[in-house]
Amino acid sequence: MSKPALYISAASTISHQPTFRNAGFSETLGPVEASSALISPDYKAYIDAGLLRRMSKILRMSVACAKDCVEQAGSGQPDAIVVGTGLGCLQDTEKFLNTSLTVEGLLPPTSFIQSTHNTMAGQISLSLGNHGYNMTHTQNTLSFEHALLDAAMLLREGDRNVLVGAADEHIDILNDIAVQLAFEATAPLTSAASFFILSDEHTGNAAAALADLFTSGATDNAQEEIDAFLDRNGLQPGDIDLALYAGKPVSGVARNIDYLPLAGVYPTASAFAMHYAVDVLSENSKVRNVLICNTLRKSNLGLILLQAVEA
Amino acid sequence: MDSLKEDLKKQIIEQLNLEDLTAADIADDALLFNDQGIGLDSIDALELIVLLEKYHGIQLTNPEEGKEAFKSINTMAEYIRKRKAA
Image (cartoon, helix red, strand yellow):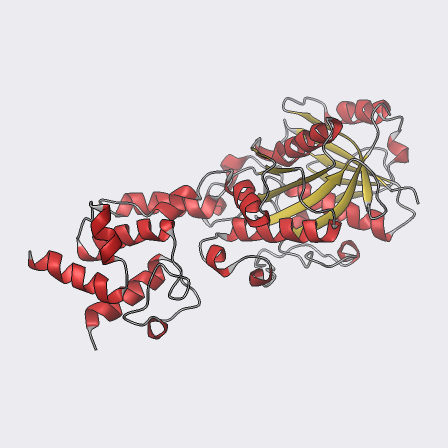
């Protein structure tokens, strides 16, 4: 492996499953039901009431997870905040567009201000009082992987701790246009946010190491790309103890789990898979190598290789 | 009970998502933009301008008028009555 590993020292997810502040959740999850709802913590414990009243679902999830991560890591202010989102702040976008169709004259500003994709990263920054690098990546089903790639590059350039994560929210109209989203999935559409602290060194509290990642927006043969990716990391498919996949299972690995029935379907569900992998690596010492293989859209391939942290 | 003031309180709670407040919690003379009062901020001021147009058909274009009108529920009601009478 050509590059030294990076370390995941905190992880936090709010989803339709009991993932928030629930270590060991990976052992107990069943498929998410179509009738399921987001399992929200008491947001007032994480967000000032004056800010909370304006926040949509995606903002509440993102800020709460981000603050939880910073608290877990105990490393103070992150040097950067990097967020991935496939569809952005849909609730506020829908509200603003509906208002613009029905109201003549002035339009309420809040939903317009908060309808942009980079609102999550901005609100996290305001809530933490963080003045560092602040970036949002939106690359459809590879949004989280691109955010992770950005975070990894920042750490290679000298940052110590980066807060990186992803969020997407469900609104009812997505059910009507699901075909146009072209996702390779049949599980219910859901909302979720997952955030992580990625660090350049293992300070004792790292739960997993991020060994490598890869993205391609024009994949013809995913299995070939996977084999080449593993080869670059000195691994064979048989070395992978667990593959978490969306789309097609990975050939030759010890165990495959489709993460979409667990997370539900949303463009950045691979971030849920990463938290799931971190949880497995923390709880099960027999698992050493986990590959996350995201082909939620057939032509988009995202690969994330996580490894157990040596004691 | 002044129905305009009661309506204003309900409209403000709805427009500004003041989830923890009811109309009864807002005194007629409470300062809207003061932490000892309701604690609104500059984005809320924009929302109040929209509220005036949406519910009362009043366009507020002079910022100085807004400063005075948005002090409290009492001053908002007084401003609406004055503009409608003009």
